[in-house]
Image 1 (tube, rainbow, N blue to C red):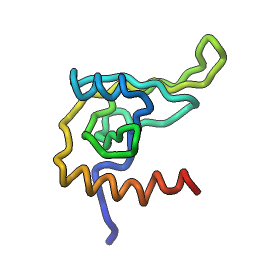
Image 2 (image 1 turned 30 degrees about the vertical axis):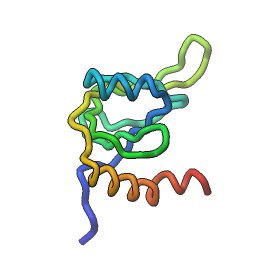
Image 3 (image 1 turned 90 degrees about the horizontal axis):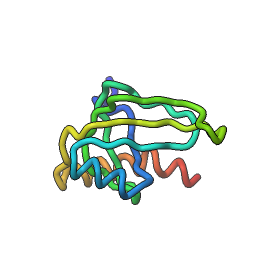
Length: 106
C-alpha cells in the first residue's frame, strides 16, 4: 500500500501580483508559457515564487492556446480554498522540494 494524497499536482506562481490577488480576493488567474495540464475541478497546493507552500486552491478553468504573438500559453483560473497553517506549509514545502522542485535543478 502506497502513500495517497488528494493533492496530485502543484500550482507554482511566477508573479507576485497573481499570488497577491489569490490571497487577497480569493480568486486569481495565472498565465504560464507553454502548454500545461492543470486538473480542472481538483484541489492543488499553491506555491509562492520562492517554492513555499501557501494555500490550497481549486482549479476552475485551464485553457491552453496559441496567442496572437504565436506563443503557446496556458491560462489557469483558480479559487482559494484556504491558506495553509504554518505546520502544513512547512511539511508541504519540504515534500515538494524533494518531489518536484529538486528535479528542476538537476
